[in-house]
Image (cartoon, rainbow, N blue to C red; front, side):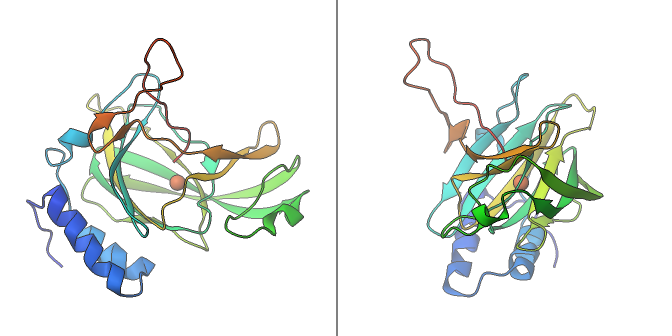
Length: 219
Ligand SMILES: [Fe+2]
């Protein structure tokens, strides 16, 4: 399918909502996200770079879909994390990103996976993950996905370009937390996901007397 070079964010979201009447599958949405690219200019209202941390910027959310732009400076990366069984699609809009894929082998609290509505309660103190291949994803390149089979990964911006990387993410269904793995200290735990900005407006943490933007945790 040819790339639509001048897609607006509004058109992208409208097209996405059209899939809500049918079965949402990895392949179906991969084709859509691949053929409906957004430019860095189109994403400008949702683009915020910070020196200390990458930023998660919400573009659209309903019961089935969550769309966000993530802005990464050189060296910024996520924890190793799961996706709670959700499906996800990532297109790179600017720069290059590495995705390190992992496979769960075992842990000492597997019974904590037997919980309704989320993948796991976390809390293990011995975890074995197998590091698998690393995918290099660049602007205009292939669409990276997470799914029920490949659900653990880490995303890293190792691109030295000073402009930073921008990635566009679509998730179904939206999740508000996920499990993060700390292999060095052998622990896993549930983390709440936050946005740096919503619909172009930077979030403000109200409980602090000095107003500071909310920092994301994992992606
Ligand atoms: Fe992720």
